Amino acid sequence: MKFRSFYYFSIKVAIIFKSFTMIVFGETTLQISEATSLEPNTFFICELNHSPLSYNRYNIFHGKHAILDSLNGKMTYVALSDKQDKSLFISNIQPSIKNTYANIDYGFLSLDGQYNKILSLISPYDRSVPKIVMMNEKFMLLQPENQTFSVYDFNGSKLIKSSLSDNSSWSHEQTIMHFEWNKSQYLIGMVGSEYHNRESNTKLYKLNSNYHPIDLFSLPISLPIHNSISEEGICAIIGINKTSSSSPVKLILSILDLKNLGEHNTLIIPENPKHIIWNQENLLLINRKNITSVQTINQELKHQNYDNPFTPIQSIIINQSIFILGCDSIDISVKGPNYINSVLLEYDGSHFIRHSIEKGIFDTIALVPSQNKNDFYIQSGLYVRTISIKDSNDK
Image 1 (cartoon, one colour):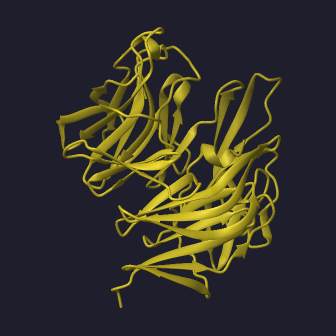
Image 2 (cartoon, helix red, strand yellow):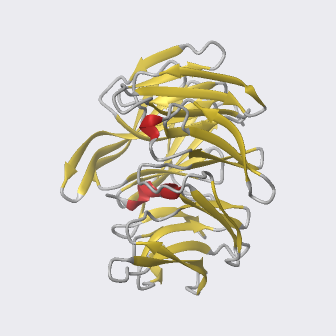
Image 3 (spheres, rainbow, N blue to C red):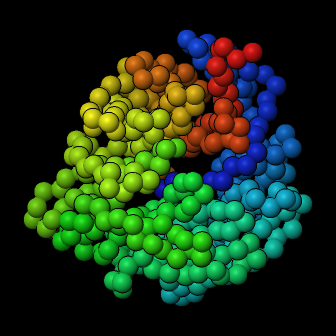
């Protein structure tokens, strides 16, 4: 399994290519750059000083130059930090000790290859790597199995370690999710691991200025799966509702207004989407065969099927249009998934426009945001292209 899917990337710089292919549709101009090549088996992070940054489990490359060869472990997360020196924030797992526990190191790497470890934590052997959330000169570690979180500054000093639940049970089936809105941090957590016995097993928390969790709202969801927050502060959470071990599973969509928690709606949806994203007041569910639009005013569901065979992977909203990265199909091999042809679907609310990005079979397809709000990147195996979206009326 590709470890990219477990982590989120903090991208802080924009990429500029000299040559573009321009495609005009209606009032939108889409520019696709020439491809830039990466080192084999690496994941694109961002572009810096006109060269791509990429990494694999053991190396970090700036262009073709390896700025880090090995830390005697496996890197699980690399992101450009908020520090002025544009250093990289890294998490690195050291080998486990007799299958009992492993050390996870956190630190910063300068572009000239100088590594500064700021924190080392012990992790039980059967526990997942904590999820990392980058904040303003701080980082948060989320541990879903026991519903705990910690916040550290960039010196490695712990500011808080807290639990979202009084239940001390530990389970791989528990989840914990984070989002930010209006410069505040929010967490979605679970009351307990026996989720099939609780109808309202999900809670929404807001972290105060000292990062202590404040219980805001209980949701009729046993196990949360997806969440998304709109610019206006409307939070959507999708999860499983199961009142007992023998009761049928229902997929629940809960929508609540963070400005007025009394405004709360719940409805049943027909399938579990690949992911969800807001486009102004409409919530879009990106499904395997279609897009479902949920209007928050009347809760009406509108479905629109893809025009051709298409497997969605990631999406982004630019200028009120949604761009969905996917592929024609996926083949599963002993080494993992193989993606057949990278494809970008553009959706304006009523029509799909299909853009072919790269032909071939790839072990990695990913959409990476840019600091420029009208740009994003697409990695297809060894190749990275920048996609620029412009309003045709702009001069």
